[in-house]
Image (cartoon, rainbow, N blue to C red; front, top):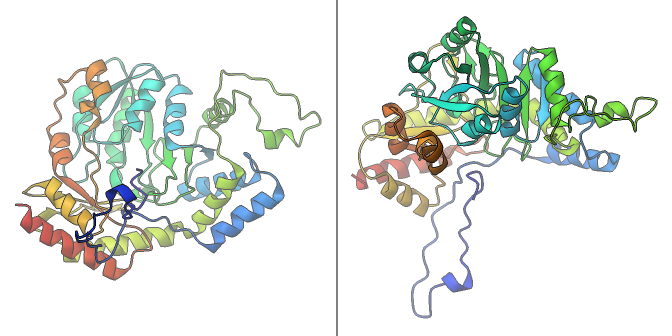
Length: 402
């Protein structure tokens, strides 16, 4: 089940208690991990597109891309069907076939994109406070085969982009930002996705959602044009653009491409979501600050926000200082709280990557984080009493799981 979906507390007939046995108690309330902020505006936007008859990639994509590029201070944005596609295209269109340094403490899609593009993933450790790629760890694994660095902005906090961009520039390496979890986050006042080639996700758990979808950002016009072509079967002009020409049926592939396009329907949702993004991010920050006030700091290490950064709390993750995390999660879920873990196991410990890239990685911080982190619910529409309910339950569960 995707982490964004609330768990179904209904039971099937086979699971119902037999006659004479007490029915299981329902939790006091249910607080899912995340609920996307969708309303009448998004519904109206979708209805307008459906009535227009233009459901495939079209004019709303251009509008969404323009708003997204302007917000991030970049020249080009390309709407796609997922962040995974954006990551793959960033590498594939740039001709990356060598080593790509990235964290293992991420969702497997980051490394999968490297492999799919024909590159070799090289895992570097992360900083213990932000869970983001450690520049010193990157330096330690650089080789003559390194072609790219892929920081993953974890949970809404930007990686150390000043240092990472400097390493990339010095070594003439491609810098690809996995910004799936950090739409609106900044490092020293500059938004993620503006330092290198940015790749974003619009999955329902993210700061901005279209249901499914992604975006690639860049200041390189040639790269943007190539990505658009490869994402559209290798044909250099979009269907919408061809409709404006004298012979719209003419289409010639300049690349062996794919179909990674976002539909006009989803782009219409994205246009509305852009108008709400700052409000939604501020709501996440308010909830995070309230968690910070309520959670027991003897039981949990709370998420860091480094000076000069803006954390947008795509996830609210805490480190359990001691005790049985599995028991803690079971207690929270029993109370209707959609707590989870992001990420365990880390990528380097997953079967495919052990089989193909070995198990000799030295990533002590990554392994400690994977064993101790807990993700608590956070989303713009949470009520303050929801935050208080989760914090109270987490504090109690931390005491009982020691």
